Length: 433
Image (cartoon, rainbow, N blue to C red; front, side, top):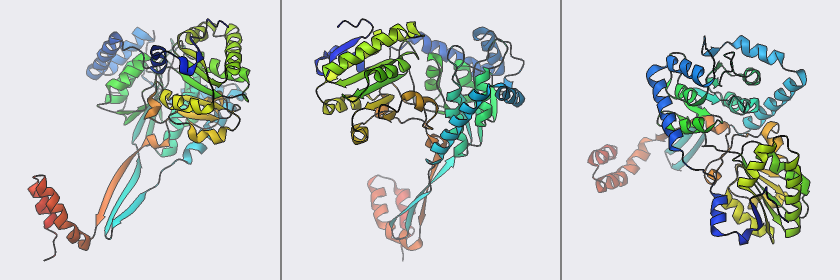
C-alpha cells in the first residue's frame, strides 16, 4: 500500500542505517544566520536596553509601545472578558497543574555520614523567574499556566511573563488572561530574542531573572542557548514529537488522531508509531492517511508526515522498547493490552501516556502534568518542566569537635598528596592534643 504522506514505512529492523539515523536525529541543521542574527539582537538589548526593545517591537511586531509593561488591570480585564466556559476550562487546568506540582515539592534532607558529621540539602525557591509565551500564529495560554503555576507553587519571589505584542501594543488576550489567572506578578509586551535578552540581563524596565522557561520559535530557542552564561534555562526545545507503541488492542483510528495532533503543531513535527505486526501497522497508516486528508491544518500536517512521519512494525513489544530508549520522544503513548505492565520498560521519554485513553491532548491541557518537555532526543538526559526547576539547593555540613579531631589526619594526608598544604594545616588544626 502506497502512503505518499508518510515518510518511513515497513519493518523497524529493515530500516537502512541512513534512514534510522535521520529518524533519530531531530536536532535539525544549525542555521548560522539565525544564530548570528540572534547574537546581534541580544547585543542590542544589552547595550541599548529599553530603546532596543521598542525598536524591535516596531520592526518585528509592527507595534508602538508606550510602555513595555502591561498594566495588571489590562490582564484582569482580559480574564473577565473570556467566554465563561473557556474561563472555567482554564481555571480547571490551573487547579490541576497546581495540585500535581504541589505534590512534587522537595523537602530538606539530612544524613549522618559518620558520628558527628551531618550533610544536609535545603531547597530554596528562586527569587525571580521569567516565563516566555509565544505570540503571532502560535498563541498558547496553556503554556503560560505551565510556566507560571509551578513557579508560584514553588514559592518563587516574582514571576514575570513576556509575550510579543500585537498591533495594539498588547500580547494576545488569551495570554493576558492566563497570566492573570495563574498569578503572574508582571507582564511585558516583548517577544523573540529581545525578550529573552531582557530577562537574562535586565533593562531599565525589565528585571533580570534567575531562570527563563517556556517555548518559542527558532530565535527564542537560539537566544536561550546564547544567554546561559547569565541565566538558567529549561531544557532546549524544538518541534513537537510523539512516539506511539501499539499492539493489537489499540484502535488504529485513535492512534492516527494522536499522530495528527502532534503533526498539526509544526511542519517539522516528528510523529512515529511502532506497531506489533504488519496488519496493525497497515491499519494505522491507512487511518493516518484518511485523517490527514481531512485535517483542517492540512498543509502543516501533510508536510510533517512527509518529512518526519513513520509507521513501523515489529514482531513483539520487546523489540520496541530499545528503540523507544534510543528515540527518547517528547511524548510516548503506550497503547497496549497491559500498559501499566509495560510502563517500567519505557525509558527516556519526556512524559508517558499510559493506555490509549490517555490522549496526549489531555496532558497538553488538563491532567495537571507539565507539557513543557524535552525534544529531539534530549529526554535521554533532561526531564520535563516541574516544580523542581524553580528551586536551587543549598548544601550544608555540620561537624562536631570530636568528629573534627577524627577527620584531621586523613584529610591532612589527602590534602598533602594534592600539594594543598594550607588545607592540610586547616584540617590538622583540630587534632586533639
